[in-house]
Image (cartoon, rainbow, N blue to C red; front, side, top):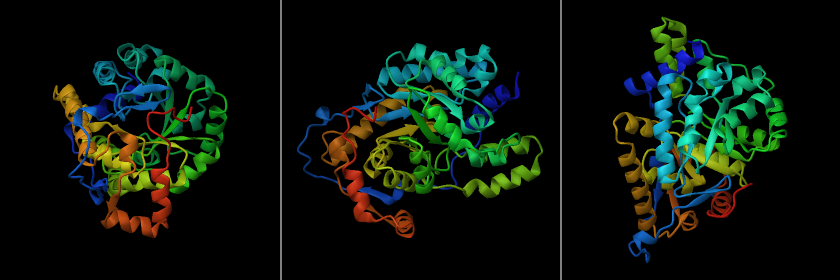
Length: 374
């Protein structure tokens, strides 16, 4: 078993046995939707659908990429894919590096397309691998492995900096990414992994033509904490101490969504990082995201044998929030007023985000249900 394969299953083990969320929150608690006591719509007429990468989804949700690359992860990806197909939501996979290194592990990823033949599926490769030399050939291999609709290229500098075997090397990434983006005919989604995207980062990526972003802000799964536990297991006290100190590093999810939408008014944005409830999904969309990404709560529901129950409740609650705001569909929802308080409001002021301009941008973004950027 390769080191990459061992790490895949260790990540899952830690995620389900340790406290790996926080200590930062998403700051969604500072986002308030306005109750409409006279909604003038019927609950069962509410439309949650959205078009993403040329396919229509029944709800604005993606099961964020989590795993693959170890024989025991195939059954997880199989169950998640079946749920994605059943509920009409999108799905991603974890980094495919393990299968690029060892083709015998491809089935742990390809099972996703087999079980989710009609919905949106995203491949996944890390920025560190691109810097190390993964070119167009390997990117296409990752996409072909899943017959994917697009590929997420994940950014995890915080994790790489504290991981026992980390590869914190990003020099030259933008140039390599630009070359890949110009050479493939599939969309690239730049995805953070729990520490968020800033206006500055998004601006650099937009300059080279990236138009899809997954913010993956702080407040959800904390990969720095996961690597802290791994360092402890290996007796690497220095990495463990650094990871403990940096466990509070990152941009809370709500702030990252605002920053990304402010910097990229014309882009498609996935809001993820600590999203757990239907109310969270609604807040993420009103703030500026086009859809929400969910990972840990879905993994937890899978291990509790409550995956369908969780997704049913999630989607029903999202529909309830639209009803309570008088929104017949997602286009109506984004027009609704919001109140931003506390730390999130202070963040916007200190970061020079003009509230009037931000409101203009968030309300005039592209229409849901219409063709997206493709």
